[in-house]
Length: 209
Image (cartoon, rainbow, N blue to C red; front, top):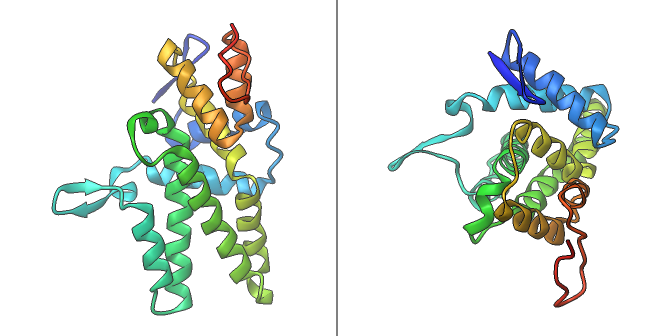
């Protein structure tokens, strides 16, 4: 495989290697500061979801990503704690992946990236609360607590991985501004400033170039 970086092609031997290096670099650039276990978790998730059969689920209309509200309902209605935890983990993972890699595609949809951030962060937080109740689950519970606590910043880092070879258009500038207003994304704020836009929150204020 080849990955585009700073206008040049860099050969990597596997998707896992690419995601590990790209996510680590993005995390450092975003000053994310997560531990190695959390970083490895995200890299494994990215590698897994690079396969369509892992991310999408079969429906009558073909392979689709199940709506997050349906995933949450399945978790709430799960027959036992193990099934509930599995549903919450998938909800958190899918929310993180989609918000990280498909943020631009939300621009014309009713459900936006802030919804995915809220759902995913909440799912990881619920997992953490459940698992830290038992001594055996405290370690993995601490991992999910870190993912929940840093969910927005993880999305920023994944946005950077996704945008490694992407040039921003005028429409993307407006979308970055919208994402910043809805989520407070530090990355979106920084990109806007690099593009010559000073983000402001005052009602009715215009973008300053």
